[in-house]
Image (spheres, helix red, strand yellow):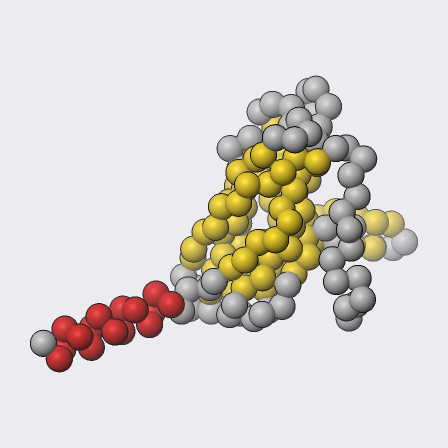
Length: 153
């Protein structure tokens, strides 16, 4: 019996070690008819150190994590394999920095609807878990308020 209780306790602790991820203010930019790409934005926070290693949505053929960065005086966008999520620190996925790109959209994304977005997170032990959020589709002209604007690093 003691062995069984020990195994159960170990099981509880190992499950608790999975990254607990919170997603705040997820939104997607609306599109015009026949537009094939859009961006998704949100704040992601993990209770323990983890990495965002994947993203998907049923409204797009492909979703990727991207970074905007200055290269030779030109702003460039590039795909990144993973995004570090430091323990307890919110990571802002926003215009002009890290964000999610949807490609090969299957339909127009209209203001006011919601779109499911699944984030895949890998913890320090290389275990993957996923969290799905409903992202609100915002107008083409929408500009998100600056999250933690007073907390620049």
